[in-house]
Image 1 (cartoon, rainbow, N blue to C red):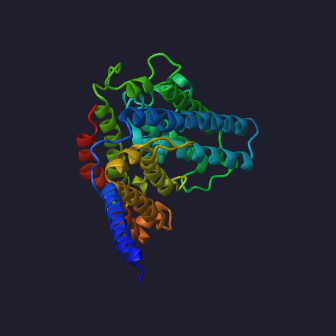
Image 2: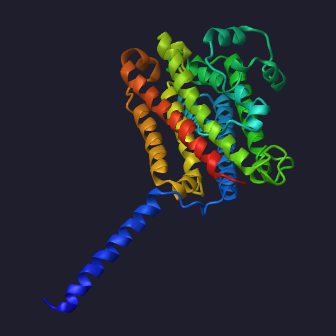
Image 3: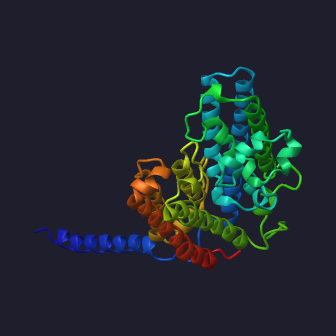
Amino acid sequence: MNPFMKTRIPLLIFFITLFHFSCKKDNTTDPGTSPVSSEKILSDFSYKVALATYADLSSKGAALDQSVSDFIAAPSQQGLETCRAGWKNMRAAWEQSEGFLFGPVSFLDIDPSIDTWPVSFTSLDSLLSSPVTFDQTTMNQLEFSLKGFHPLEYLLFGQNGNRLYTDFTQRDFEYARALSIYLKDLSAQVYASWDPNQPGNYLVQVTEAGTGSGVYSSRKAAVMEIVNAMISICDEVANGKIEEPLINQDPSLEESPFAKNSLTDFIDNMKSVENIYLCRYSEDGTGLNDFVRSFNISLDNSIRQKITAAITALQNISLPFGEAIIQQPIQVQQAQIAINDLRSALENDLMPFIQAKVTD
C-alpha cells in the first residue's frame, strides 16, 4: 500500500466523524439564539394569517350575500345550490379563523354573534311564525342563536339537509336576506378591525407588541396569546364540539347539523392551528415552526406530526358527524384523542418553550 494513502485514510475518517457529530449537534441541541425574531413571527402572523383569513372571510361573506339576493330575486334549485356552496365557502374561512379568537372578534362579540350553536329548529320556526320584521335593528336585538351562520344554514338546507327551493315562503326569504346581510356586515367588520389602513386597528397592537402596543407589554405576551388561542380551539373541538354530542349520543348537539358540515368544521379548525403554526393562508410566512425548529427540530417535528394526525383522524370518519357518533364511535373517539394529544403538546411542550425562548 502507498504510505501516503495510509496517512490520508485515518485523516479522512477523522474529518467525516467530526462532520457527522457537528451536524448531529446542530440538529439536536439548543444553539442559544434563533435567527428568527419574535417581531417577524408577529408581523407575518398578523399580515399573512389573521389579515389574510379575515379578508377572505369578508370576500366570501359578500359573495354569499349576493347569492342569497340573486336567489330571492329569481328562485330556482340551482340558485339555492349556489347559496349553499357560498355558505360552505364562507364557513370554511370562518372555521379557519377560529385558531385565533382573540382581539376584536372576541371583545366585539363577533364570535357569538356569528357562530352560536347548537340551534333549535323549533325556535327558528317560532321566530318565522312571529310578526317581527326582519330588518337589521331586529337582527341586532335577536339572541345569538337566532342570527349568524346556523339560522341561515337551517333555511338553506332544511332540517334534514334536503330542502327544495319551492319550500321557501316569503318569510323565509325575508329572514334569509336579513341573515346574509348580517353575516356580510360582521365579516366586513372583523376584517376592518385588523385592516392596517383603518384607525385603531388591532393589527398594530400585535405587530408593535412591547413597543407601541396598548394591549401587549412584550412580544412574548403576544406570542403566548397566539399559542393560547391554538390550545383553546383544540380544547373546544375535542372536549366541546365532539364530546357533548358523543357522550350524550345526541346529534342535535352538533355544530352544523343541517348542512352535515360538522366534520368539515372540525378539520378546518385543525387547519387553523396548522395555518398559525406554519404561518400560511394565501401565502407562506415566517412562523412559530421556524422559531421552534431553530432550537429544537424534534419538537417541531412532533408538533407537525400531531397536527397531521388530528386532521387524518377526523378524515377517517366516513359518515356525517351526527351519524358517526352512533355508528362510528371508535373513529370519533380516536379523533378526539388525537386532537387532545395535539392540545397537550401545545400546552405542555410549546407553551413552556415559548416562555423560555422568547426573551423580548
